[in-house]
Length: 331
Image 1 (tube, rainbow, N blue to C red):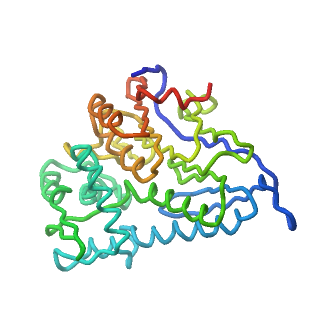
Image 2: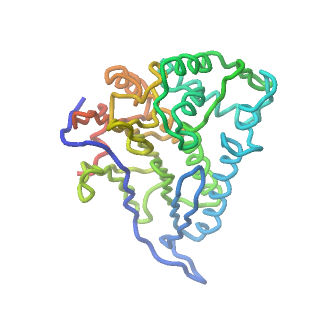
């Protein structure tokens, strides 16, 4: 493992290749089209190249919003909203929701519960779901603990069974999955070159039109004009989770939204974690899981997964990377 010094936190900056503009007749392969919109409480910017890019981007936008309509915990009518507001412990679940839940539970098992889709009652207690922030008392946390635990979920062909009071939240996988599905929509439209920014999630399709890799720079938010390195990326996702994304301060203490399932308090190991992975949904889950795992355990998990690399930034301004991370750095 390699250590780098001097990184207090991380933000992802996408370095987009500047292609040609829109053309009314012949459309060259490097003609660039953009689409920006808000979904999943995130401002998203998609860029794609080629003659099918414009229609493909609209297909991708629709697909992201379809997933939001399924996965939203606050939108009445979504499947997950229905699960969390059920009147019985067993409720039907659509094929896509069931697939997502199984994938999330797989990462939960691989991480020993460091990623857990049942943490929504705890997030509510801290106020991260509605902005009414508070530091909960120990009794309230103890009560919330009884409403968590991915092991208590039973999902089968008939739906999902949860104990009374339990709720699920796809916030740790939905954006990543949306990135994967947006990429599928673009590929189905014939797009071979695109880069998608979904907040802290970056998804790439192919390479730039000139055949070179996409550049994703990881910057230090305390020094906006500096960055610690640039990743060379093609057909991969880069996902970052950081304590600076959502937080509040009380009595001089900062509390962020990534809650450790073991303590029910904000995870204290890192300031940020970045994952490079071919599967954006997996990368999304992994950043949360790794954020809540001691470094040695997290490193072991990453090294056991094919095609996955990671970087961990600790509060003492150190950064540790997985064994293959440097091979993706732009020299």
